[in-house]
Length: 352
Length: 249
Image (tube, rainbow over all chains, first blue to last red; front, side, top):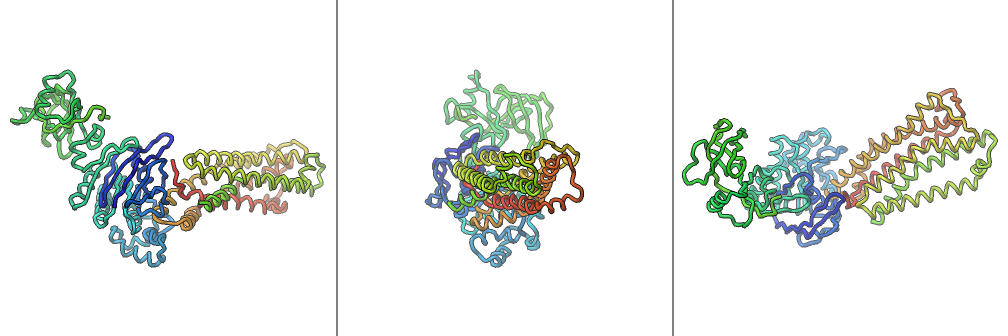
């Protein structure tokens, strides 16, 4: 079972998705990241059949489903706006796909009631009107409704964890992962949170399945890789920065420093831009530990972010965001050294 | 697909033909009333009064409009990516005709009666302003309903619902809006008729409850027709327009 997109394009007046070429193997959890307007939702809606592509084809299990109407596609869809039908009770929302499939309404209700616990929906909520449930409950009901469409082979989940508080977000993410592990289907999970995207895909890998992270920008699929690979070796500065701070080392006109850096960190790419993540650059008020590659620095400001203290320092290769021990409270102007443990290299032209 | 196109065209035609049909009915009513009151008529009124000409003119207008809007509807489906543009354009046209329908009817009345006195009494002005404000309210409601329904119906379709089940869901979801539109249209038509009667009567406010006046003039049937048509059209339009078109911007 494979989901394959071949030169898929959706053209609009002010937006152009694609061409997207993509091949997602069976049982893969694919997290899709990107800024607002990157085309993530458009891609999912096109796959679900709500938007007809202007060019390209969609294949699922080798079958061309490009022209198949949404109701006949072997896929399910859930989105940020839960869109529970307000004229129905919770139980009827859950049973909707079963009734649509032709099941008797009472049988569908019975089955939905039995499965409700799988979606962490309490029994006493089943008779409530859909409009009266809370945001977290609505999201779980929407997930239940989507996954009670039993014959799906691909699930498209569009920002289903957005606008939820921490506890509900974790609950919905956990539920999604459980549903993925119970099935052999392909899951496409769009989200705005890099940490969650990495977590979901890597959890799938930990469970012995495939996990990938894709990055979209301005309607294009920028890159797709395993979660660790995309974080540690992003192909562009844009992707790197999507996952957190990356400082770019200014090496122009600094031949000696530049050659020292490239001796310590051999670059696989010629004429590249060099970046560093805060966790790979540690500030020491005294000398950096022996053996570490370090450059002189002067502290500009510090801010505490919980797990570490972040610092901005001035160095011969420009200002960098780095980390310091959590308990430290250096005064601005403190001089010291920045120890660099890992650098990122980006091909020229892949930086934006 | 063909069934959907036909259904859509019928719904859209009904929706868009309504203002013209309403104007036609109001004009006929005016002419009939004139005839009953034996008012001396100008030649144009004679033409309007001629059953043959009137029948042909009204039928031809309605048929022409039906065909025009059916064509627009088909075009609407054909060039799906421009749906918002076509839809908004068609609606703007409908709104403008609805805006001017009381004015047109009043003008028709003035021409028919043969005088140009227009009432500027306070009640007429208030009702006239209300009459102008209600059609946009109705259209806003319609846009809201169709916009909101579209997303629900799309969700239903990805959950496997077939067109019949989706239409039933659309009607259930649109029920409050249909009732709302019914009330708005009743109020709007009531205001229109009152304004027309005031204008037509030359600054003379009819004594007694207006409703009894309207009943006496047999216009309550028209009122019911006016009020029901757009609601039915809204329901049909909501059920049909909100079906996933497969093309969306």
